[in-house]
Structures are given as C-alpha cells and as structure tokens.
Amino acid sequence: MINVGMNRGHNSSVALLEDGNIVFHIENERFSRIKYDQWPFNALFKIKDFTDYVDDFCIAGMDSPHGRIGPDPDIYSHFISQLNKSFNEHNFYVHDLGLDHHKMHASCAFYNSGFKEAICIISDGGGSTPPEIPPEYFIAREMTSVFSCKYPAKFELIEKHVYSPLPRVEWDQGLSEKIKIDDSVGSAAAFSITSKAFGFDPLDAGKIMGMATYGKEDLSLPPIYKDGKINKELFLPIEPPYGDISLNLDHTHGELGYKSLEFQDKANFAFSLQKETQKNMKKYIHDVIDITKCKNICLSGGFFLNCVANYDYLDGFPEDVNLYIEPNSLDAGTSIGAAKFIWHLKTEDSTIRKQNTIYYGPEPDYSVKDKKIWELDRNKNESISNVNYEDVISLILNKNPVALYQGRSEAGPRALGNRSILYDPRDKDGKDVVNTIKNREWYRPFAGTVLHEEANKWFDMRGLEESPYMLYAVNVREEKLNKIPAITHVDETCRIQTLKKNQNLHFYNLIKLFYDQTGVPILFNTSFNLAGDPIVETLDDALYILRNSNLDYLYLPEKKWMITIK
Image (tube, rainbow, N blue to C red; front, side, top):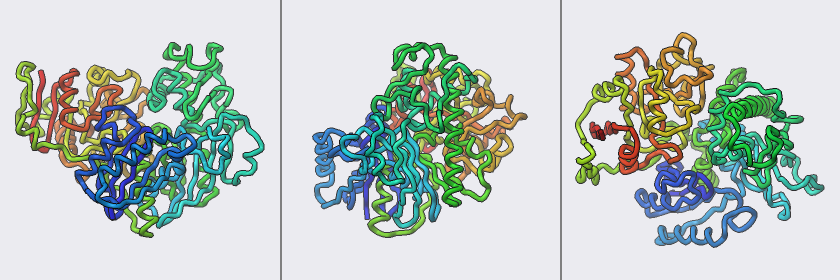
C-alpha cells in the first residue's frame, strides 16, 4: 500500500510511505529555493522517481481548502489537477486533513516516538480553526493542544487552547469543555509576533532565541504573562498567527519603531520572552503529566524547536517519564503525520516503527555530473581532486571551512552531516570565519557534532542518552569551556548532535580522525547554505555557494572527491 502525505502550508512538504514505512520526505523549498515555500509541487513530482502508483493522498494544512482560512479554491483545484496529471493512470483517494493541523503534528510525533501509547503536547504559532467555532468567528487558531494517543489511530483530545482577536462573547460557552477560548496568543505565537516586529520573517523565531542570550533582566519592561496567560496588552495580534506587537518601549503600537530599536533593548525583551515562555511551558508539561499520569510524553509543533527551552525541560523532569521531541516539529512534519495517520486508520496496523534516521531526501545524482565534471570553470581556478579523510582534516586544521555533501538530505531544519559546513571548534575566531561565508547574524549560536561515546565528558547531558537531531542546547562542562570557543555560545551552551558510527559513517570517521589528532571529539557543524536560503539539496546548489561565497572547499566522501575554488 502506497500513500503520500502533503503539507500545503508554509514549510510545504511531501512524504511517501510504503506499507507504513517512510520511503521519502522533503520540503519543497529544497527544490524551489524559496524559503518556507507554501506549495509542494516540485516535491510532489519527485515522487515519480519512487512510484507511479498511489493509493491515498493525505493533505495536511491549516483549515479546509473550501472554507475558513484555507487557500483560494482555484489554487486548490489546480493542486488537485496536478495530482491527476501525475498519477492519472490509477484511482486514488484524497483525504483532506486541513482541519486537524495539531492532530497531524501529534500523529508525526507519536508514530515516530516508538511509544505504544503517549500523551502528545502540541504548541506552535497557530494551527487550524476548530470546526466547533461558529463560522462568523472564523479568525481563530489552535495554539496549544494535548492528545492521548494509542494504536492503531486513536487520538483523543484532552484539551485545546484557541485564540481569536475578536471580542469574547457568549458563543464560546457552548463549546466542549476541552476547547478553551483564551484571551491571548500562545507562547509560540509570541515568538513569531516578536520576530515580525523586529523586522524578521515571523517564521525566523530562532533568531529571537539566539538574541535572548545577550539580554538581561529589565524591570522597566511590561510582563510577558498576566494571570498565567500571554499579556494581551503587550501583544496585539490583528489576525493570527502573526499580527502586531506593542512593547511599550517608545509608546507606539505596531511595527513602526521596533525594527530600529537598539540591539540591547531587543535582546532584553527577547531574554524576558525566552525565560517566561519556557517557564510557562515547563509548568504546563508537568501539569499534563500530573493530570494524565502518563509516562510517555511527545512534544511537537514549532515551539519545540526551541533548543534552549527543551534543555530546560530536562531539569527536574520525572525520572520515570520518557520524553520524545519530534525533530521535524515544524509544519513540514505534518505531511508525515497525515500519511501515517491514514495508513494506521485504514489498515488498523499497530506495528511500532520508531524513527531511527531522518535522512529521507533523494540521493545525489553523481552520474550526470561525472560526465560534465560539474562544468568547472578553469578561469576561476576551479579543480577536482581525489582525497581521503586525512586530507580533509588537514584543511580544517589549517583553518579552512569545508562543506560536506553526501547521501540523502536531512529532513527538518538541522544539518546533520549530509549537507553541512565543517570547521575547527577550537578556533576562537571560528564564528567570524563561518559568518563571513554565510553572512549570518553575529549573535546566533553555532552547533557541534560530538562522538556519541564522548558526549558526557564534554557536555552536561542531564540524563540524555543521545541527542542525534540537535534538539538541545546543553551546558558545556566547565573544564572544557576554553577548548571549543567557536561553538560555545555566550551562555556557555552548545546545540549538539551526538553521532554513532552506524548513523553516518563518513562523518563519524572525520570526527574520529580530528579527535585522534587534537584530543577534541567534536567538529563545528553548521548548515550548508547562505543566510536566508534553504539548505542546499543538489550539487548545483552546492557549487552555487562555492562560486558566490568565501567557501573554497566541497568534499564528496562517497566519491572521495574535493572540489576546490580559489
């Protein structure tokens, strides 16, 4: 049985399942090169490389395409038309799951977690409009949801928090007690709104997280929370999930003035936002555990890509409770959730398929490129040579960043060694060296990949057995702080990927050789892209960066090739 999941909102994506197993998954932005691309047409056509036959198309999104806040029906009709053109030789069934945005996040996390049953907590910048909301109040979004999840496809809603900017009226009292109409936005939306107010894309909330570590407590700022809810006098959404914000710093409302605030003022606000939202969410998670008595907890939705908060949750977490955070927590993961939900619903299959990898993208096409030798431009001193691990590490030891390109691309927002830029973590100027290439904001933290067996010697793992997907910013042990300055953030933390040999052989061997020569079992690892662009997917994408940045070296370990541009 073949089924395809698609997310037709921002971070649009496609997932292909064969007999319940993930065969392929990718965000459309990797092909279109449009950051946060909303339509998965390119990715959809890529499915043809894997199959011409599909039983079910499972469409995730935010709201039904035929009403509420769904996309233009004409665009949706075009979308269905494209499906028919691509797979018109067979009959297939289309499942519209747009009214179940948070449920699809929960589905992705639960089925990937390996748990037989679990509680899933979902929090993001805004999901679907619950169908129980009367049509005249359609501007409403789910912000935080809690589900009890069991095989094969039982997702029971425990409670859902919904925000609407419209005045509170009597109609909400007729809703199920499980649906709560709050007078304020949720924690994730507060980050999105702040990001927009500071001049970034609302989906660039990670920049606010990085900025927060340079902030300090400022008692002149208004509180983030009032009575346990986001302060609605501070955050003034016009239409969820991304409206306006008033910071009460210069007595104006909206965006005017906030983009030009001094960095320290922004950092102080970000500090307060980070501190208070993670404190609030931590309490919420513990309350859910106390109420449900469930020992398996799954977290998903964009808010749980906040690696600083994720690490904080581990402090004081009950020892007998198992925690799983979905690495594909952004909306791209809902295509997996939709495909898996329909698979288990239709087949009543209760087979547990724990996620052990997220290298779900397509394999590189080396065959065509071999013949053209990448059409290297000799006038630009471009060359290709055979190399081994020692050659690569020698370059890094001589303070040369090296791009690593191999295998199937990673799902989600983190580079995990198949589309990465590597560097020496010991270089005190390492951040500046890599930022010169990527043109990235100076205050954002960088990550490191550490050999799994050495992680506890270098970092306080707070009970974590591993961190293979860069979901936690962990404390660097005090005695190691001066050894890896390039990846140690100002708060003495580092977002880490732990790596076992069977997870990524070439990447592991590079780090092991670096360890043998330096005594440091870690490499600086950042995503292979320029600021504001999606992570590279094809070799053409990789070569574009070499030709349009200060990056000189591209290593292809599967071919034992180094492409050099000087």
